[in-house]
Amino acid sequence: MGQSLVKNYLHIVFSTKYRQPLIHPPYEAELHSYMGGICSNLECQPIKIGGYTDHVHILCMLSKKIALMKLLEEVKSHSSKWMKTKDHSLKNFYWQDGYGAFSVNPSQVDRVIRYITNQHAHHSKKNFQDEYRGFLKKYKVEYDERYVWD
Image 1 (tube, rainbow, N blue to C red):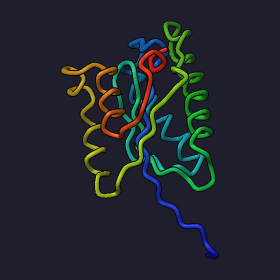
Image 2 (image 1 turned 135 degrees about the vertical axis):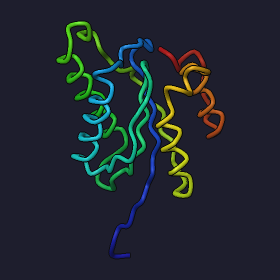
Image 3 (image 1 turned 60 degrees about the horizontal axis):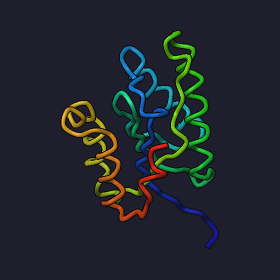
Image 4 (image 1 turned 180 degrees about the horizontal axis):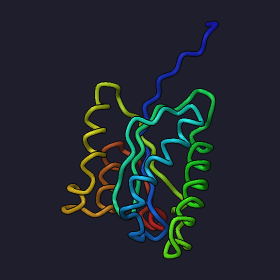
């Protein structure tokens, strides 16, 4: 085959360190846009970015030119540094080391967009830990609870 053709939709989820509720207006929307810019610069087309006070969801198309780990390294490091410049109260803003990344069937992209869009309403009923456990169960990811949250 002479050409590499790739279309990988990914739903990526990660939280602030210790799940601290640090993502609030007016920086929330700016943070999501900033992260989208990082994704775009790495040729990972952002489709929807959203989240809640303690975590972020990114729906994007992973470029064939970059490893998932490199994308996350770039998004996390640059956005963390950016957040620290926004307010003195954010000087200790960090992302948790780990992340979840789940493939999305193209027929389910609209559903994931709606899910990310409705994060604030969703989290009035369910906390991040329960949400994340749900993803792990849905995608049949084996994990050890002792190592997921630290």
